[in-house]
Image 1 (cartoon, rainbow, N blue to C red):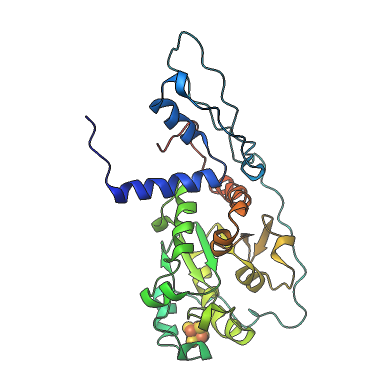
Image 2: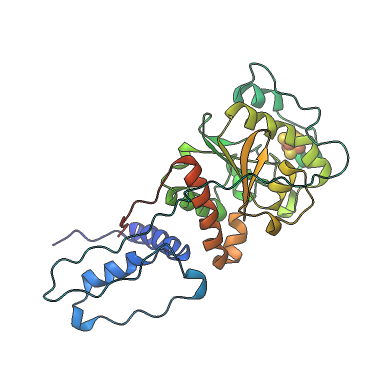
Length: 296
Ligand code: SF4
């Protein structure tokens, strides 16, 4: 008799399988059901909603009879063979936000954090509990930049630890990475009250520290999560939908903007778009979804 699975593990497995289903990877359910039910009792699979239609996944072939062990359906290669050219966006008129920020020789994350100190440079300091500087691998090839801390992050002093953070963790793990492999930070390091968008003066005051973090880490790829991060780094007023998923350039590095996990919680069908964006990032980083891999 196999050991019963604990309730907490069941919940974790359920959340993980739900995430894979949301981004279009559905064969896990099919395989699991096939293993559990005799063939004569299997129910026909309902048609997938349009946003689940994942061109990468081949249709399941009919089982041969007599039933030899069927081969797992394969996930087609998901990496783009050719990296698209880097586009450029028109920037906001006027002096660049980062014009006066030069690379600091011998800079480090530790020094940047020390220079930030118990910062009171902008009004966000008066309502924060903890500064959320950033977290992860200081030599990461991939840096995620969000907007600002929320309530959970403000309480813990760590980025992306609430519901949206859990979704980001799932996205990172779906890429074949762990959170400790990447670096995660925000445009502003203190929580804006009521989770409002950071204001222009707050972004202007805090973002030079973000710039130092990026310069020190020197990642291969920067992924902006949401419009605030993208507009700040790209210095553009364009809506994120106009350049989401395109390769852009930031201080000589590849940058791609995608939707914020908090937006995905409100709008789950957009997960499949974000997954396509992350596959582009995987291609640049040399990561591939394992063929036929199952999480069940
Ligand atoms: S948001 Fe940035 S600039 Fe403003 S107080 Fe916090 S650390 Fe300082």
